Image (cartoon, rainbow, N blue to C red; front, side, top):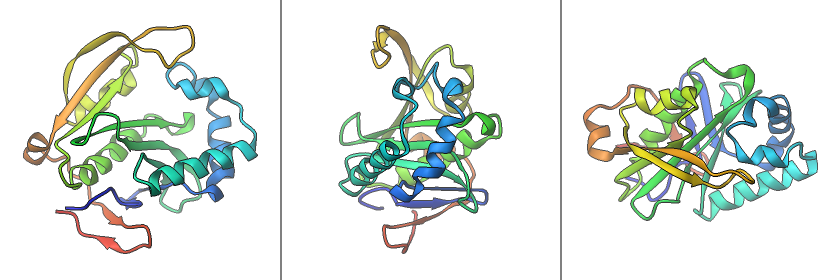
Length: 207
């Protein structure tokens, strides 16, 4: 067991890792190309398009939050780390014993299993953190693409919270609440081969 999630996670086709400021040009290109695609479901798009300099500052804040164990936001990269495929994370919004997982995939990389595989990777490392007993996932009931991920990975839908999502200006949106507990995960682990590494690149043994 580890005290916090790894900085870098590798699977046969993906790299998830902590964002760094030097990723800004790749991240900028990915977001700018996907603004219309992401707008219906990602509230941060309301601030787009950002300037590259603002993107650098955003990634600095992501890195700072990761280093301080306040929030674990990962970039999703191809195996060669030449392209940003999306973003994901383990978020400390639900208390000491759980994480919330979230994801967004750029327009040209949808329907390739990237959200599913990256979530599998986060489940594997998230439940390896000491005391974590549950991982939650929230999505819009109308987002059928996003709903398929927890359905495939063994989450249980605890219900729909009406008008709870206030992150979109001037709107009150419903949100589906999905949950997976550690014992459920261990009983029906999705199969994915990963390697994990700490902040200085040392391999982390996952239990």
